[in-house]
Length: 246
Image 1: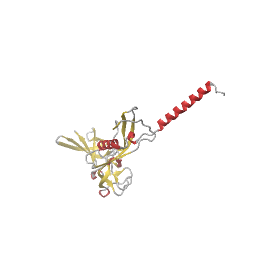
Image 2: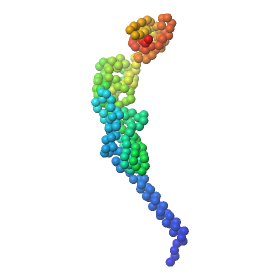
Image 3: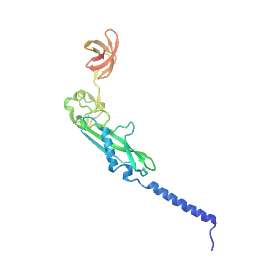
Image 4: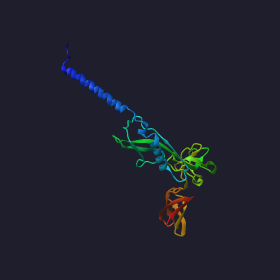
């Protein structure tokens, strides 16, 4: 009987061992993490929901809805005995956001982020019929209704007086909420106009006239040259009117 050389036998043995090790490694890496290891079920899911609700709660918001997303399916997380949900630094639980999940007790410490969507409902102004860019809103154009406050980062408007008379800066769909960024500030006067200058102090008010050096947008600062030639800065507060705090 002919026996293969010793080196050939050794090579075959080494090859078999390497293939077995590679297959074992692949099996370990390809094994998907169980639901409880990703934090998508059971008590941990409830903790995540509670964290999202507590972090987004605000006065006057009667209803909050939290929708949990899914972890990246490509993640392969090692088993973990204790997972802690937390709010990442600088993250606001408002609209589309995320919550961190970190393994505190396990052979491998890992940290991942779970996408969440937080809807915070409250009353605000809406435009039932919608409004095109440039439309000047009137009393009949806005009503109060329940909206998702977290749908946009710009604050909603709740006082009709802050919307009426303003031009729409971006198209509003029917039923859409009216937010600060949706409206253009009113222009009370233009550069070169004669304006009334009101100086207000503790218990007294002094008024005069001046010439506007800059345009006066509602609530924003403007510069005026007074009758004495002095240049002052105040806040455009009304039609051809500027207020100087003293």
